[in-house]
Image (cartoon, rainbow, N blue to C red; front, side, top):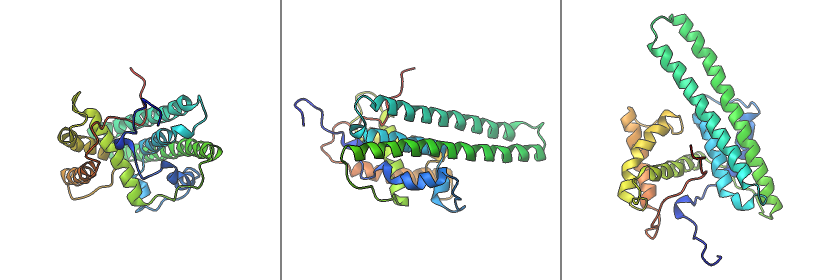
Length: 243
């Protein structure tokens, strides 16, 4: 390690390589049918954007010199578009639920069209994500990184979202508390609830609170398992442009 270079942030290290999702994302993007009970049904456009973000961050050292910013911006744009589409879809559903002048048949027709729109948004996000992952994989091979990550399991996917959830919980703590495990732990339910609303976590339990508690407990165990020598948990996969 070069003198003066900061050591890797343990909070950002993961055993899961986002490139391991490439094959399944490519298949979905190409139009593969997804079974109704498949865990893949839980993926959203935002989920695909998060995978792309994670891949750019984890493989930034393998990207061509001078092009890390380009891939960062592409992943950033994918996330911004996914968030915009999620806001649009959520707004339509909210309107249908609260506007009394819309008949039941009209509302059902709008929902059906919205479902088709949302599916196309997911497929397009998957296509953009797969393209980014494929280019990163090719860049890694050119740099001499041998082998290919094994295909990700359902547990791997959940662990990936848990890592992102924990990272976002750190971002919510007060300045100077980034290394305080108790402060981070308090923020975990807030982020878990947001992730559930965005469709990034599977449903567990009977009520929303049950679901939040189950996921929060699991992420807290992950936090407890991090090295005790870790002093600062700050970090994020992609730096957002300042508004």
